[in-house]
Image 1: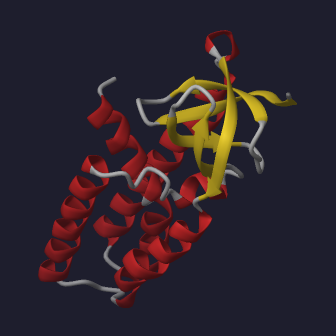
Image 2 (image 1 turned 180 degrees about the vertical axis):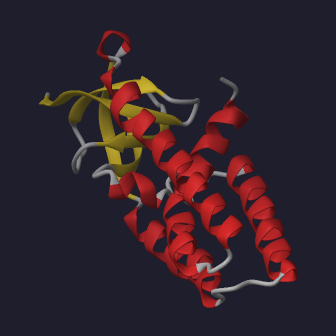
Length: 175
């Protein structure tokens, strides 16, 4: 899968919570069902990463962490800034829906073309953390981890894309 396709999957997954909230909030039937579908799709894409990708232990490589930063604060700001404005209208007009769609297209383009990988509330809901890390081998990027990590931890990971690794189920080993 291409880098852009991987990032697009992460983008859809990052908005799964919003689509779920909109499904509850919207009164218009087709909008409600569309949002339910997008919620299920987004959660499914993130569950695929959390359960299937993280289970590929035979492809795992160990990495030793030298720096670790939790991206949770970025997620909090994202929720307040980008998600709350959508929840104000229970029965949006055609113009409202067009504005929402345009916003999502613009946000999607920015997400896919930038380093917003760490901003994914759905991964946090699935009990994972997104950590910005650097390794002793010189790689830096993001790790989707099961728990908090510290510098000098050695973890087994599989690549999701060039900038994102997923911790496999073997857990953390100390050096």
